[in-house]
Length: 325
Length: 276
Image (cartoon, rainbow over all chains, first blue to last red; front, side):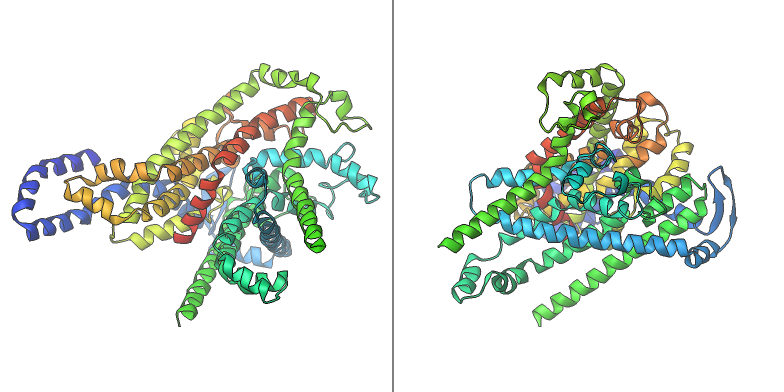
């Protein structure tokens, strides 16, 4: 297809050039007609690829969510309409999954942005070694999820993990050193690990945003006798607010999708205490072999993400309108 | 004056604490790799690496299995990087420089792909890959991984191309350059930093990827390191120092590359997100 297109173009190349010198309006008309199909030439392959490996599978999954299908015999599926969704809504376990997901997402967003903001403010000053400090902060974000899950598991090892040793040393030891195996401490441990891995991203992004805060306005606020907090509120916050909003949406979407860190640390357990939507969907598909239910749960997750993004886009548009008024 | 000094001291302490927490787990992987196995599981705690144990890296690699995993990860990552960039460049160019029917739809699809969990598409993709005989193949993994990271690369590159003044391109067009030439000769050289950022992101997306790798590849010798390493979690047969040595070798390239490229990576990602 591309080859044909190319040949067609190079064939028309020479006469076009001649014309362009003699007949200006005609050339313009021609290039307008050409530019109508040129973008599709660039688009064809990437869009086809996304269709095959993202959109079609998504639609298949959507169809699957209205069927009863077993992993062991996927060819044999029966249409059950909304049954899967009705079963989900009626299942108190799923309500718990939703609550856990909500806690997970909120803590990740607030924790990562909060710590990221604090770190960015610390880094937003002139000092020696700032470049090094900035680079070191990004280490958690660069670390692969599998390696993070592995080291977190080792550090929380009941007997020899350094975290247990440290907690015991300060008299805060958990019963039998069980952290990831305890339905009380597993979720906090997973949350801390996730926030640890996530916070460098808002740090670096906010640091960039802080640099666009005009120095004069913070100085003016300081001279006016405003304290650190009021300077931040009056001079800094208005500038970085859109960035924070964007970060919040990004991190929420990422946290809803996050799988391997939670799966490898706890598999959603113990007793479902760390089971988020994605963990639920995976274990229903590959442990209970229930592809239909898994798909339905996945769709709920996608819809939540979609609502989040749409909502934030609408809010953003309204804020922009208010700004221009 | 004194208050300022105290404030500065507090800032330094706070910053050092954050940096310590950020780096410590990686350091702890390193220390654990360089601790005598009998000391790892004892009441005494060793907090400094024992350099006489550097052999544990060699031991890990000598098993053949581990070097095989790392090589597989490398091949899959290079493939993903290549495929993602090759597809993202024309997509970004079309979005940045042309107006066409369906542009909004393409933009929405790119946004949508950011919300799809890999774990959700594992099942339908498994069926597709089965039909196309792409299961149990590293090439299949490249195709699956690229589908998830290519949209991010495209958004980054679109952001970068949007920043190139249209006049440069128009001048080239007047001189008779064709669109493909304009793209390769004029636009791409101007966005090399964003291109390398997109390449790094694509490479390490595949390097870190776990769900597809664990589901689509069955042969032990085709496994990437992420799956091999995950297999150690909860398994007791392999010495912990070897496990940690593998974890360190798997993590270090990602960390070093991001340190090197983080400025472009982050600005690229936010630019893509803001404008996409």
